[in-house]
Image (cartoon, rainbow over all chains, first blue to last red; front, side, top):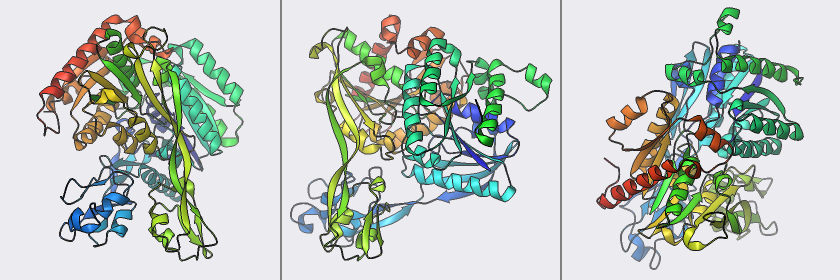
Length: 309
Length: 307
């Protein structure tokens, strides 16, 4: 079993549309949407949710007002909790009782431990949900982080763990993962231990800049990566520069996909940009769909034995 | 006034709106303008503004150091740490600075005083100026520029975002000052750290189902933070009308629609400044700014969400 992560650094380069197409092309796989705070893959694959699971990995500070004696008596002029919190989550105005801002609370528990009156407890929070679903293209694991919640990295880990166990149970060939944007916490959680990270970029100064940071991240964690240049024909000279950069870095360019309004058209219809079918179906397809077919063939070669040239 | 530009979905044009809004106001010359690029994982605003950077400060987090002579292996530090950044193994405390959030709990509660803290660099925050027309920076006609970069491999972006936000400068409190914040994509902690405390939030979206889905998530997040909001629809004409319908249903003002145009896309691709090549967009963005000023000015003190 091989795990493919589709990732980008910069948002909006076309990760999800490409994963949606791979869902059609790959025979035996489970899909995982690890963009847990703005998941979109379900909009292309119309999953039927089989199980909904609560995600509770976070405890936050809650003040029991009946036990709190307020700043004046607590410790000189201020309350201990307001002094020990380093995240600006506990504040008190004047002689009023302290207030805990759940958005800023990182769940460290220092205030609860420091409170001389045991007025603060750490309470488990429902931080989101994760789902195991069926789609027309195979099983899918996805999630939804609650509004303004922390711990996206842990939710990513949960989604990946579940996808892996489904793949093992059913003897599937691939785990295909739609990754989050950026290079931070949820991306790091998505990347550890994958067999290949396909970095989707675009020939813009921002896309190129973000590609470089993503390549550094992949090197940092020792993850093998390849590049797809999406919408390459919007700036062919720029695309050439991306290719040159990749060759300097020893990165394989697994495919180049042209800009095609049909990608947006498919998105509006809520379906992947290509359909499963024989040669006739392929010939009727747009240029982006055809390029993604070739991209997937290259990915399969690279995942099989790393022999893509 | 502090206005954050966020989106939910990545690649909808946050940086385009933030950068060109800053330029449009600076070109007019009546507003003092700061641009804070809070997308510290993938900062891009500098690619379009070419700032002259003057300061570069490391952003650090206090992480524990164990004095092995004093450590008795009692394990309290490991029990205190909510982030698994300290473990107690074989009678001694072992630290994992990568996981540390810098709360200071282990040092505070170690009964032997065996843990001290040392700064660990997790990124940088840089400040500088964007001159008005390529001339040397003249404060009155320039954009104050701040951005941050989280170091490669560091999972914790919010402290770097906060370091960038702390450089907002004098324009934040002044009525004719504009602090424009370019936020990261998504709706979780780094976005919250960017948007929280701003006077208004512009959500940039595109008229596709992805744009709409992520817009609804972003609206929930911004409302939770109590920040009034409006929407800019980028690449209007591509996709469908569901975003506009959603905004109408939710009483969310659509502040501006930027049409899909390959010329705009090409200008963006090579790092160009849209307001210089398409001056009418500058007028639209100044109009957007006046709308926001009017909305923020007319809101009652306690207003949390725009209705």
